[in-house]
Amino acid sequence: MMVKVWLAFGDLGIWRVSMTCRAIKHWGGIQFETVWEMALVAYTMIGVGLTPAILAAFLWKRATPAGGTSAIGAGMLVCFIFAVLNKVGVDKVWIFRTEGDFIIYPSLIAGLGCLVLVSLLGRPPAEEKWRPFQSKG
Image 1 (cartoon, rainbow, N blue to C red):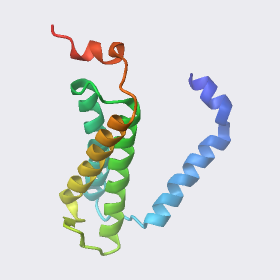
Image 2: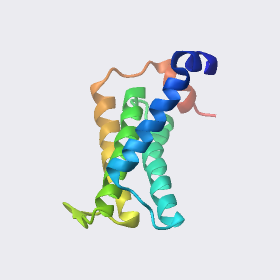
Image 3: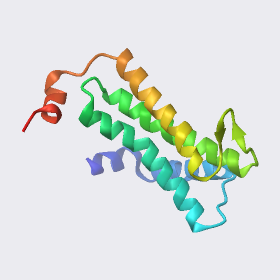
Image 4: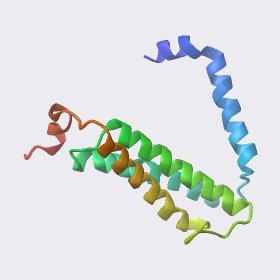
């Protein structure tokens, strides 16, 4: 699989990923003052992005792959936006503060909202997809 991906994208794919990351960093203007601050944002993005999708895969029969993917994307995107807003001096968006641990809440709401909405609007997964995760003993 890795060989197929490399053949499809090669050096151009690596260059595109690198340039995209640089553009996001430049556009967002994120310059962390401490390693702790950078780690907090990074682990918040991962935790808020992945946790709802992983838990839904094991605990909710109606969760779909599209719902999980949208939850990951929405959670990470909102977390990134709030980190950028905090860096440019915005203290509060609606009722949510943009500093530190407070970026978890809007990110979690966005992720869970997308997970539920996309999963309910899509076709339910086949029973053989969720049965191994829901079986008793």
